[in-house]
Amino acid sequence: MALRRRKWVSIEELDRIKDDMALLVRREARRLGGLRHLDLRLALDEGFNIAAEDVTLKGYQRDFSLNYGIRVIAGPSAGRRKASANGFVGGSISAADFTSSPRIIKNAIAVANERAAANARRKLVTKAKFRHLGKSLLPEVTLARIPVIRDTIKADYDIDPRTVSKEEAEEYILDVAGDVRKRFRQIKNSFLDAFSFLERQLFFSSEGSVIDQTHAFTGSTVFFIAQSGSNLPADLYHHVGNQLGWEALTEGKNVYGKTLGGFAAMIADEAVKLSQARPAPTTDKPVVVVTDPDFNGLLAHEIIGHPSELDRAMKWETGYAGRSWFLRSFTENQVGKSVASPLLSAFSDPTLKGAYGHYLYDDEGTPSSRVYHIKHGIYKEFMNSRETAAIWGSVPNGHYKANSASAIPLIRMSVSAIDAGESDPERIIKDVERGYYVVGHRIPSISESREHFRLSSRLLYEIRDGKLGELFRDGSISGHSRDFFMSIDAVGNDFKIFPIANCGKGQPMQSKMVGNGGPTMRGRARIVGARSR
Image 1 (cartoon, one colour):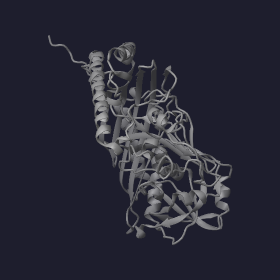
Image 2 (cartoon, one colour):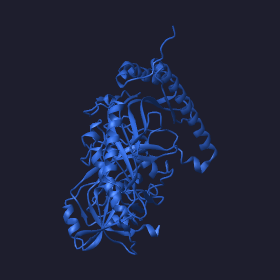
Image 3 (cartoon, rainbow, N blue to C red):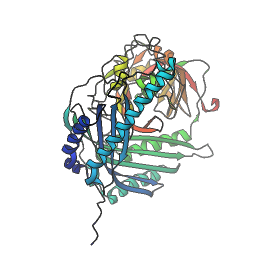
Image 4 (cartoon, rainbow, N blue to C red):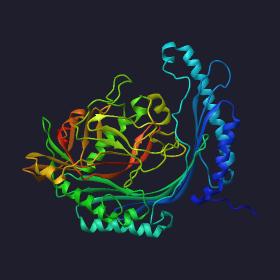
């Protein structure tokens, strides 16, 4: 009789191999010659995603994935010419091979060690061959010190995604889509997708850390096209979610305080209103703009967060999204200098909850912490990894992350936000005689080092004598980053964190779920309408 092949691995089954993996990492670190450091990430996720278009189910998938990632720092262990380099290996393990995980990981560690040694030898050859270029290559890879951690973090959820049946998820998303169709006759096309899953990641290092973290993720993106009369159609999309179970959507446990049905109705209503609105004007000069927390979350992400990733600032990773206006070189940079109004502070903090981006330890076992990029207008510090922290001369702050255990980690945002101020957000608007109120965000357009920006809003209102006036469609604001931040003259006390499901970085691209946030702010920028694009 043929043996039945295993088809699934559950999160709880990682308990069967956890101790074996910790022992394997310690043993291989002692056994392999020339090895300076070894760490292993092993991650398993279980859950589902579902999609519907125009009240028709378009797809449903329930699945699991088990991935691993290994980093070795190694190099020649003898001779006068010493060097070390990184070696990475990543892959996936099928359900059928789960019992063979120790053998698979042991073989992968050996390959990572060989790659690190080969990279180190090549580094020595390059330094000898290219006299000036060689000076930029540090002979040894140094990791800033962190504490040895042994900890277990349990997921936070009420409704386990694995207990939500296909029938329940299908009925829920089709009910939401059907309600939108009934309530908004101007909606000509709708698309909704939703997901809910658990992710458990085990981390082991040759230094002795054993970290076990499990998190829940649930979210949905809605997309609508509306048309009113003979006007041009208006399209609108947005995302809602949280690091919770299915209740994030069904019970409204998210930043909007709305169920998926309530959130979809809000965005559909906005799409209809935009389909009836005039195109936004374009101003020749900067005007007063009041930006809401949702818009400022994107501002914090694009103009402060990405250029505060130290690998990007050091030109290690500049693919697609460019470099940093905060750091031209180690001697020419904005650290300790004024880059914004004294009213503005901004940070990245993985310990915050309320959207995505929360964790207590990053992908090299560093405890997470708040790092202030801007404090009362002065630029302070970057997000880092252990390696870049050693080069920069700073303390590791826990921002080395990958979108999958099989991918090489990069320095990534967690929850990046502009800090709350003291002003009443309603008063911020009431004090404006003529200006614009910018609500929500859409696609950004940013210069190579992010010193200039144009960020589209979902909604753009005129402000007249302290009151909201006409709504415009297809509007954005544009400005020089430092000039705009220096113009901030009011920061609200209405701080919120919003989920971003698809922050992209790296080549090949890694799409990561993060949180962005901020309060209401007031400053000066140009308004750019659709006809000027």
